[in-house]
Amino acid sequence: MIEQNPDHPNGTCEACGGPCAVCGCRYCPACYDRVTLAGRPLELGDWIEADFTFPSQHTRAAQLNTPEALAYGAELLADPSSGWRRATREWVAQREEVPTP
Image (cartoon, rainbow, N blue to C red; front, side, top):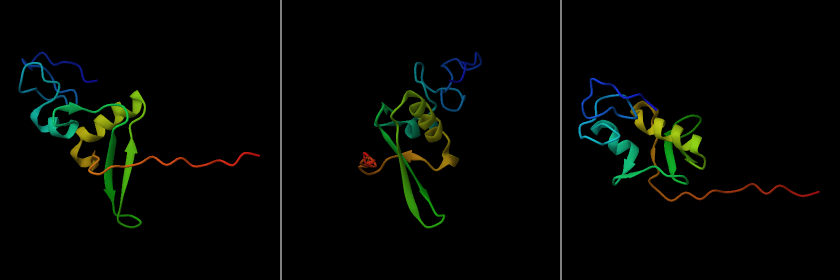
């Protein structure tokens, strides 16, 4: 988490460290839409996704199942250059079946 900057009278954005525009808001306007969806912060179990072009064009998704994953996912969403976004479709986790001896 980014420490509050005393030069920011309304607070400091938790995602980028810039000044918040509204008193009590945790994010600046530039980060708000990336980090929240319809005003809802990321929660455990949410999905994020990114498009890749190597070795072929495809989309990868990650489910945020731990507090650490949730924090890292918020960092990825706050950085526009990461290419990650909130999932735009429904993803389903698939477990690999391990044969029992």
